[in-house]
Length: 194
Image (cartoon, rainbow, N blue to C red; front, top):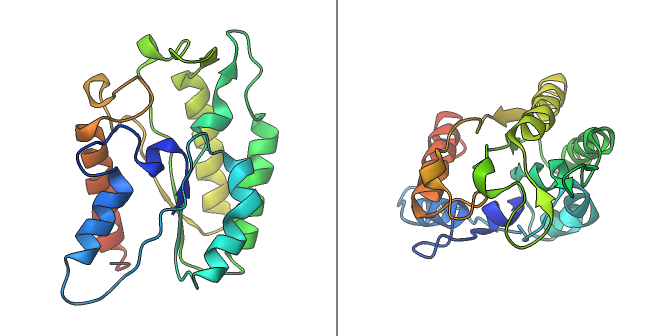
């Protein structure tokens, strides 16, 4: 698992985030042992994933890769922009992640970008970064299209969370992480990954 602070588990002080919830679910099954390594970092972007995911995945003999990234790419640095990572570079990064990931495994899934509570993200309280649903949707559409073109699984997160499911407007609270976990769990069970 490679992603940003949401995938890392920020603000789920109950069970450590949706990825950890998935690991606990997998670990409690008697039929098969599966290791899930969460290699997500706070502030992560498609650029930071590109810098490190191959070595992390190869050393662990990964047979499946899950990516959740893009919101930090799409945010505006200051009210007027620019985006943290331009949509053109974001597109190149997603294509390159897929190209490199396919050299490791064909079991790849990208989680779509989740919405935010803009009343708390324009700007966020700790830095002059602005997260806008309109920008997130643009980046998400690019990701979805690239995944489709490359025969890579994509799981939509659009509109999944309500404002009550956020701790600070960006990061899910306990209920938000639980909702994401359930969406991912059901998807992976449906695809016979777990």
